[in-house]
Image 1 (cartoon, each protein chain N blue to C red):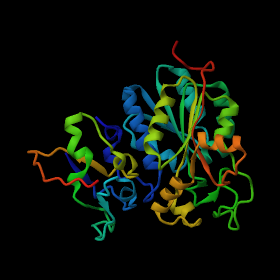
Image 2: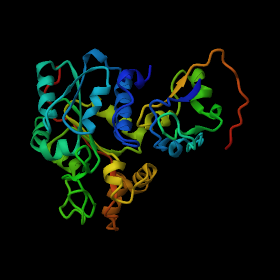
Image 3: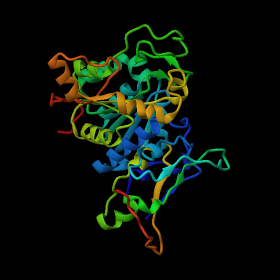
Image 4: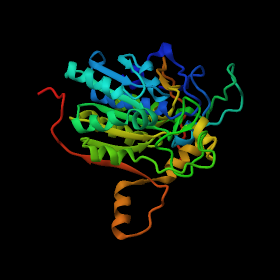
Length: 90
Length: 262
């Protein structure tokens, strides 16, 4: 699975930068077509849900998706799946 | 399937401001409804007037957007006309506590099988930030430019006293706890009332030194206090911060309820 931010829905409130335990979201620096500073993803392959959702068969963590007031955060299926090199920091 | 399937994708992005907690509360409520496994064709969302009451417009089930403060009255009608329907009410503090105050206490008294999610942003957000019955003392708003001087409504205490079967309070920062509380409310027969402290960065935060959205989330994180800790502090006679937001489940009981399928 791959973490994506829907640029059409995001309004740039930066709440996701506060709640992610891996700090994957970073405050955006470049305005998009609507003038919104959409947060940038910092190595999104570290996301628990991206790595382990297929194994457990349910949504893991998912706090960013629940918190996002604009319903902009979601996961899309990757086809074909590309195992990326993952470094998890503790 | 996740809660995102309950949303009307063609209506998004919604009209709420950047960082408005209403979207978060909508997510948590839909996640609870999804976890409960309700049939979208047998679920009705009812709302009144206000920012919070835009929520049912973004949900793909049947919904009622009713007159100001009368969401509970309409929901009572829906529930009693067909008790097999699952009814969830979205309402705001101005809708529930000010204009619909009488409907609220009598819905609690009758104990109708509804789930009421109150998005309490401490202000009338949609009309320009006027003070509402829940604006805390000292808070600045359009109609209280020198600080609110009247005591605020404690909606949770009101619901407990009026006889609701399940009463809880959480903030928009506590998403998982809120989802669980709403799910408990959906399972409880009788009226269940969940007050959610929501942040309004545009009209409340801007005037009360909480301009950034992340400041509001930080405020909820630091000021909220679990009910168990609050009770312990009170029992030990130790001082409790006056601005603490007491969160948790306040009451769960099984009084006779109305509109339950036997």
